[in-house]
Amino acid sequence: MSVEELKTELQGLNTIDKLNYLAKKYADRIIFSTSFGWEDQAITHLIFANNIPIKVFTLETGRLFPETYYVWNRTLEVYNKPIYAYYPKNELLQDMVNTKGPNSFYESVENRKECCYIRKIEPLKRALTGNEIWVTGIRAEQSANREDMHDLEWDEGNQLIKFHPIFDWTLENVKSYIKENNIVYNTLHDKGFPSIGCAPCTRAVQPGEDFRAGRWWWEDQSKKECGLHATEKA
Image (tube, rainbow, N blue to C red; front, side, top):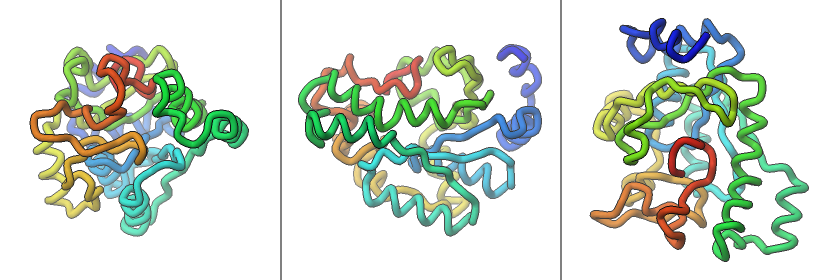
């Protein structure tokens, strides 16, 4: 089924009904990626609290914040449902660290993208293999280039359909949903971290700074991408 046909099928449905429809139509071929941020915690709740059969996974880069691991563990305790971890390949990671050291990503954009590939892109490819729908926490207001996107789109690079169930939610919508449903969230958000990735590559954002300013802050803005979502900036 094409993206346009699927959009027609989903028209008029609410968020939970859309997730249920896709989970049924693409049984065992639909997967949700979480990094335990605000948006992903809201979607995890939508899936787990409503017993929607969608596999939830995360990329365990080995460089996450302690606060992120806490949210991960608490989420497992609250819902008693699995979150599958995908790790970097040992050989690739060992070769990079042995050759360039543990913090080579600070030295050049090329080195940083190599680290992103090993810790995130390659594991993501493995996680997505065999699936037809990839559910993500992307929201339209997060960056300018996402304004041309839609909640349902074709991902050419990964050859599957991406569905963004809270695409039209504002940040206030997300925060209100988390509060109303008592959803565990990453306390770094309360300390100026709108986007939370690997600890060495993420800092708090100062008032007036762009939403993504805290990611790879030592690089030129135009180079800030890691490749997880090929149609948008990192």
